[in-house]
Length: 283
Ligand code: KG4
Image (cartoon, rainbow, N blue to C red; front, side, top):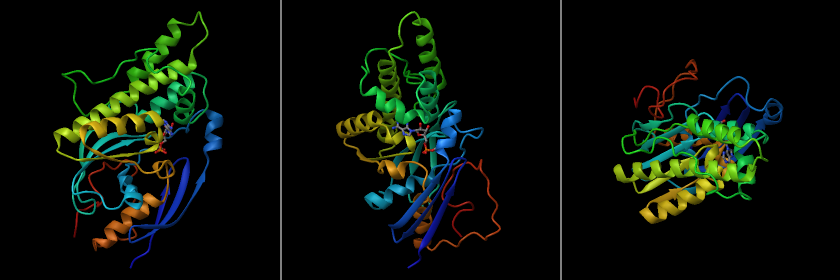
């Protein structure tokens, strides 16, 4: 049985994980998040990695069904994908964000409200004291003529900035703004994800990436999936952010499918478009 070491390196973190036969044997993470917090964000890189990592959920919840929809929501990505057999089938991109990623919007709005970096957990925390219905922020790209699976969060961030600007004569209701903004993001993400499941006859939704740790996104996804009869799979928050276990899980899947490894002179392409687990298709 092969034992797979996965290494994930990004602008801000390096993680390692060891997986054998779908079981996580160990993992560790080194982070420079404290240094980034001093600057209010990761400077200057926007992480351009593709989160095929969706595979990490297998560690906690077993093999994926033959067909499922994955919603990848992180600081660099907001994508809806249609997944089949991860080792062999191409990944179908149903839609991505046309501007800011969801996590990026959380980070920017947090900065606007004077909250610390990373902004997502800060907004999540303070929103607990706020009223999600206090301000009706737009649900971007959810009109009847909008592309159903594409996202746009830069206008929502601007709407928050404009609201703060228009009400600057009184103290900023940070908790209400955070809760209302978070509600708009959660509503938009889950509405589109459930539409993708319905349209593509997928009975499972996989929710992954840093923003999947958001309490309201998770709660609304759970509620809407239950109503629609869709099974929701969300890895635990620890596995939702940068880690090496997700790389090792994918390697483990490929090894189990007896895929021939790429040679060691394979070069890295940080802006590679995600089409599947294999660069060249099965050989
Ligand atoms: O998956 P991740 O670690 O990948 C990137 O490096 O992109 O995601 C990081 C993003 C950040 O934008 C962070 O603010 C967001 O995930 N995030 C959250 C929460 N925890 C992390 N956003 C909303 N609510 C959270 N609880």
